[in-house]
Image 1 (cartoon, helix red, strand yellow):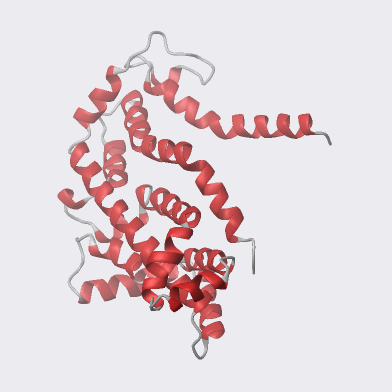
Image 2 (tube, rainbow, N blue to C red):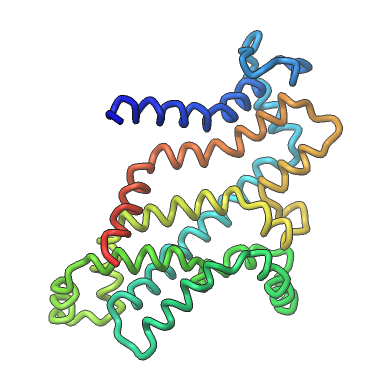
Length: 272
């Protein structure tokens, strides 16, 4: 199969994946009351961008929910990047008894579905008095709660020549300073990959906020969108407009940093 055929197949697949997004945008710009009567092949009879402003007004506390989601997402990104990179550095460069066995144990936790851990984690956070706070959503990122990211950092650190760390040691850097000033800056592709993964997962997370956040002032955009969907007064055009606004940051972040994302994944698997 030649290159043109490959490109044609990729274009068809990309169009299939983009079709739901296109339909959402078309519905969000429809005149109020038209709704599902307009098929996916029908463009709006006149563009109505005011649907977005109306959706923000009718979705109670939209900007407060946006701020909550942004805070949780940024804190999760910082926690994942720092803690997972630190663990990956330890598994790649530090020698200690049981290192390989412990790394295999970390990888084994990837096979545990989150539903299995939901009840024990909830009971633990309830005993600590952390229910209806942001801590249950942020603390796991500070405790190395993403073994896949640890694996990515370890694989990338294994590709960095040992001469660099030896030179840092000769200059008087200890293990932590070597990690912070030598290894971590060189791992920017993986840092970008982990940041994008964490952003997409945290921004779109519905499961964890539903379990741990009860008060309306602490909820996130996904919970607000679900409540907006359940409102009997909401029109489908406004619901699609609100959904587009919630999804927009994810699309923007991926489009801006997709090269960093792909490069990080490729380089992380360069050495076993």
